[in-house]
Image (cartoon, rainbow, N blue to C red; front, side):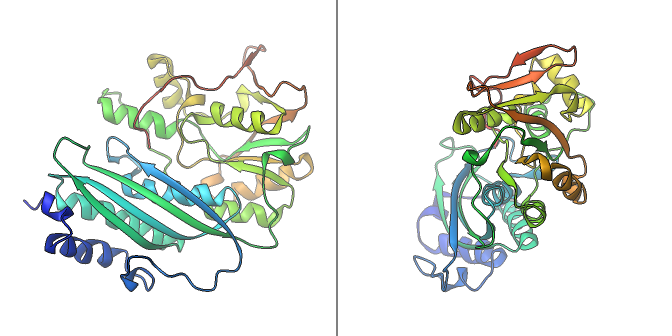
Length: 335
């Protein structure tokens, strides 16, 4: 069995072979193949968006994706929600000694496939190997670079005003519940798949039809509840959600009730919160529903101005409760 050894991190022949036979082979593009200590990017005169992220998910393969696909989707989505067109990604691998090289190839091919479908180039990278027991199979760090076109105004929480509508593009909590079920081998007879997806085309579509989108955010760790709290804290506005309107799969809801997990705080990897003016809300909603990743989009709430910077949830039994930020770690190693 071919496995990763400490020699693969030595900087010698095994490192060279690993880079050439896996990374250059599957991430093949003109910029990466400059093969310098840095990659040179030419003629970038537009506004740039830059993000960085690390992926330490356990397990590394799960229904709906793997750590490789997740690393590309997560980076692309962080660029897309600020209105940027994703262009370039760098990747750093921290690999534990003993990882099967076939497993590494599968992950790298998954990354190359997702990047190719998006049209983003992986332009630089690094590989480190740690001793057996010092890591957990593989960790991936990324940096993403995107371009914000001049005709797209900058999005931000300070643009939010009373009456703006809150839209989500589909069911929440799928990723978090999927990962927990796989990791703990709970044995639930349910078909819950991660929503791991790249949202750049969906974001482009709605930005093209409306100049009144105020802010977009992807509710990953901490879920919908925490992300909306971050928005209210920054904007100094409050948000009222209607529980009946928030899409949650029956399987996710049932598992949450049994385990004591609130799906509103479970992680997502293919969802976006869009806050848009009341005038354009229906138009944006219709456009989102044209995209397969937005077919279940719903308006779930609106912005109010009560000087409290809170998120309120109107419950199904006609009550109202405050939805605070998540405290503690609901499910660790989720992305």
